[in-house]
Every structure is written in structure tokens, then in C-alpha cells.
Length: 159
Image 1 (cartoon, rainbow, N blue to C red):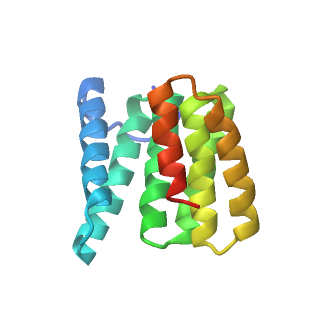
Image 2: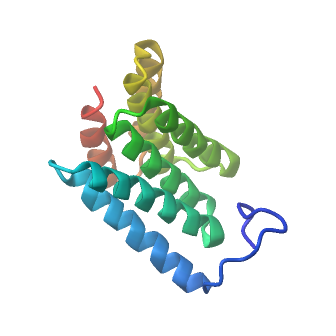
């Protein structure tokens, strides 16, 4: 049982593989909506629900990395929609998962990117600046060259 599950809560009757498949498919579906330039209000709602559903399924079978990435995506969705409070909440949860499990590299850099983006949506430029500084420092430590390049390209959309 995942540590993310509530003690005594009824189980969702899906196999671990079904949870994994749903988590991945919903993450990818939410990402296609994030990339869409002319989303409708209904598509915005669907994007929020898909990101949360993906994170839910990772909570059933995922690792701390999966949980961090799920929280990152939920934060990104809310930031894109201009909803500061939930964007900040989920960005903080992303960072908490990274810290709890000693996750660094790519995921830690993106946790700070999420906090910077959410802070800008909230109008907190001082915190955004600090998170950008932390994101850059973490980004410099990303081992894989292509991942590092992609991270800094994404970070440039925050600044």
C-alpha cells in the first residue's frame, strides 16, 4: 500500500498496472491540453481534472518521484490558468516530496521552477526571484545534457 493512501480508506479496485497506465495516460492528456493555445473553459476544467486524476493514480502505486512530478504538473496547470493559491500549494508539495526522498537533479530543479512560476502568478516577485535563483542552481546540477537544456528552455518561459 502506498504511503499516500489514507489508512482505512476503501481501495480503488484497479491493478497496480491499471493505476500506472491511467496515471501516465492522464498526465500525457493533461499535457496536450497545456500545450493547446485556444482551450475552452470546458477544456480548462478537463485539464485540471486530468492532472489531479493522474496524481491520484500515482498516489496509489507511484514512487516519490512520481508523486513529485504529479504535483509539479498540477501546479503548472493552475499557474497556466492564473490560479495562484492551488499553484503554490502543489508546487510546495512537489518540493516536499523531493526533500522527503532526497530527490535532486531534474525533479528538484523543476520543483523550484514551479514555485517561481506560481509565485509570479501570486504577484510575489521577491519569492519568484529567490525560487528562480534556486532553480538555476539546481538546473546546473542536472546530469543529463539534454534534460539540462530542456530545463533552462522551460525556465526561460518563467522569467
